[in-house]
Image 1 (cartoon, helix red, strand yellow):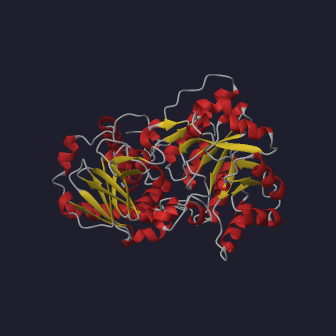
Image 2: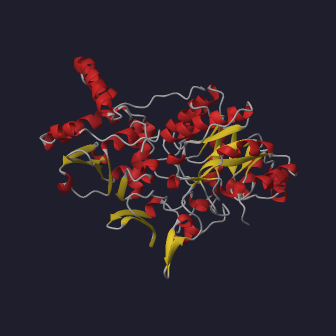
Image 3: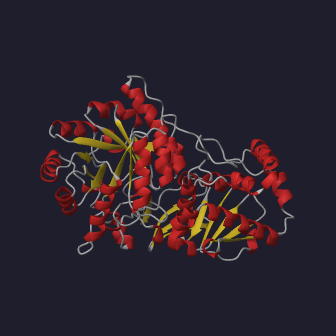
Amino acid sequence: MMELVCPAGTPASLRAAVDAGAHAVYCGFNDETNARNFPGLNFSPEELAEGIAYAHDRGAKVLVALNTFPRAGGEVLWHRALANAESAGADAVILADLGLLDYAATHHPNLRRHLSVQAAAANPDAINFYAATFGVRRVVLPRVLTVDEIRAINREIDVETEVFVFGGLCVMAEGRCSLSSYATGRSPNMNGVCSPASHVVYSEETDGLRARLGDFTIHRTPKGQPAPYPTLCKGCFTSGEQTGHVFEDPVSLDATQLIPALAKAGVTALKIEGRQRSRAYVAEVVRSFRAAVEAQAAGLPLPQGALARLAEGQAGTTGAYAKTWR
Amino acid sequence: MTLDGTELPRCPRAIALAMRPLPLPVLGVALTQFARRVTDSHPGLLRRLGPYAQRTVLIDPTDLPFAFWLDPEAGPRISAHRRHRAPAADARIAGPVAALIGMLHGRFDGDALFFSRDLTIEGDTEAVLALRNALDDAELDLSEELIRLSGPAGALLRRLLAGVERVSGLPLHRDDRNGGFA
């Protein structure tokens, strides 16, 4: 059966994910070492140890995301996080930064290393470099590849691949995107926050919901229409007489129906996005995907997706997996 | 919209009307006492709020006749106000009472309620996110907390709340469903 890797932003969400059938849960510390450094989210070292014990008692793994890029001179925070993850009993750490990968390989050689999507390793040469140099055992592939491209990559590498199948859809070269930095001075890569809440202001106005990020108005959503996340890449902008989404519509990834094709392409694990979401979301999505991977493993028809109402834009897309454009 | 795709229930008009004469200062004192009991029994809640406990939030159940002003750091302290006379707060979160309680009880997802426009947030977005995440992690069941504090009257209250929940559809209890794979 394909491994289901599920999000947890809080200890309660971790328990909800495990109870709903997650094979593995990924989470992070409550600081800038992980790319979901949001107010009120994440784990202290003690909470992580308790969460790992809960998961292990029920046969699930816990993967710890340390997937931001350390600041020069501030590496100790990331080094301490690695040590805390190992001592808490983490099954793997998810890393993006070359220096941190090297540090982990040198000082924590027995701690399994996964390559974060934030490293944007999208071809066999890059992946084989990370595997050979830092002993990376699994790579999380960027959300810019087709299923055929994933199959071709898997033929040329010896490490496991993990792909996103549901949730927020980052359409940029992850780990390289500077849109949030441009608008706010803070980024997922360095600070663990894309469109940080500190710079987001919503206001209900006569023409609908206005969302501002820093000095920029990025959406005006008329009454009755689904509201999107306040990210620049899905902003709706006006230029001259034209108004539209410059980069991407506010939709979420839903690759449920591609699970058999991804299995045939050699993918080991399926990842659900959403550490910022509630335990209600986590339980619902994990339950649905556990049923889907069990059906796939048994050769049965996949259950029809009924998760669109949980998604940004209340609509799903298969994203780049089935893209016809280049 | 709820997790199973159905429309959110609204507080029955009869209940909202019955609440209208409630004396607001007394309601505020009672809610403050209740909130302090809850935070005493869930110390992780304020710890998770961290520095955001200093931010005040106006919680506005749009189908009830009043809104609640919450100051987490002051104990916490809650005061009740007529909607248009509520004091200024760092942030405001508004929606049907079913959305607010259902989110707190782990029945609904806050982002999904935001996408569907059932929930409105204004002002300090960090404060709202921190409060939502801390409450979600606390796994509260307000009905059970109330029953626990009611002493001998708890059994009667349990039956009353179950009846209100059944008739109104309001999510008055925590969702304790298990995925079945554990």
